[in-house]
Length: 488
Ligand code: N7H
Image 1 (cartoon, helix red, strand yellow):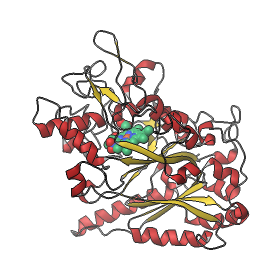
Image 2: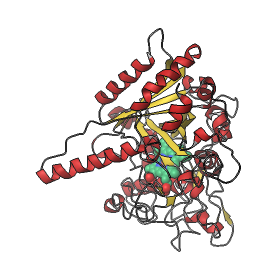
Image 3: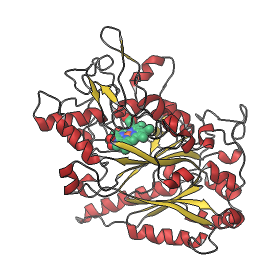
Image 4: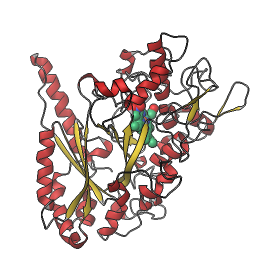
């Protein structure tokens, strides 16, 4: 059975994320053996899933105690460390087994045309920051409740690998700091919407689920567990062995460096309110229909006309919808077919197509662990409607199969105009257009229908508000694999 002490903590539980530093590194070619020896020293610092769950318990106990004493809870000092490797990193370390995921093995740069990244229409080279175009060998994720804690932990890690010294075994390729937004924006991404509401629950890991939250098998996320399509003889007594045994309980991380053009997005909403409503509500509704949720998190499928903040924060209700109300499957009265949440988790839209399959959507579920980066919008940016300071989402998602996970959501769903497969009241096919947030294609032009509930076949031309500037596919090994296969 699965032992949560063996699995890195970000995968199934999520490292604490008030602030996180993503430290991307290159292994020094001439010091690979020394690096692998030092890695053994890092392993005790790595936070496991069991540890994250016990942190969660401590935090909630701390809150309860504080409430009991009538004081506000003190911030517990907490830090978390995880390490992941790209295919280039594995090869550099001399780990040449085929892990059984072609998308991972080729890397994200080679995948950029499939993902539709800008720049790839005319050249093989997307418009990315240099570090990701050159490629990185791995990433150390350090998280904590404060910048001070993260700085201390990072300094400890840098001492292990002598980062910066003449004998360093790894070199910094890029360091990105992500921060949860301040004050009442906590938990909201930069466009203003509450994020991180819908995550699958995992069988045998999460004891309970919220209404509407589906259980997935462990192998949807962890390699070698039931539900991994390469589930194999190395781990159980059945089927052909298609993954090396050290892959067990690891997971693939799709990392994307996504910039968001926030003042441009807000200006567009302001200038294009849905008609027939007070202008502010018209703009707010347009935004909600782009996302599939209001800023509070309330799903438009349940609350189609007005935000409902109580619904947004109520975990027993805010995920309990399937795009399956009678008016849902053929009309966009409640939620546009192209809305971001509907494209990336179509719920009944695709399960209906495969009534014989228990859950056609299961293999496409991912665990999202991203965090925001960059400052709040300044008054000058808001006034001009133009981004001056870079900000956005450090998108990070785990899955056991990148093709069916992140790549599928981006390429086959968000970028694909005729997904979900829909017919209108007359039986004719309805082409929903692109996911208004992240849908993209190398040609550049974007549009969707259904933004306006009163005029559902009208096409809306969409400027670009999410700009990918890089990323990589990584493998997050289990603790036993780090000890026995990665470290010396
Ligand atoms: Fe999305 N946003 O802030 O508007 N996303 N996302 N995402 N996303 C979700 O339901 C956002 C991106 C998914 O189960 C919410 O938890 C932004 C990529 C999936 O119903 C919000 C960016 C991919 C879900 C956002 C971005 C996904 C989801 C609602 C880029 C995968 C769950 C909160 C800057 C390829 C859907 C919630 C479900 C939800 C936003 C990127 C996937 C508010 C701004 C690249 C699977």
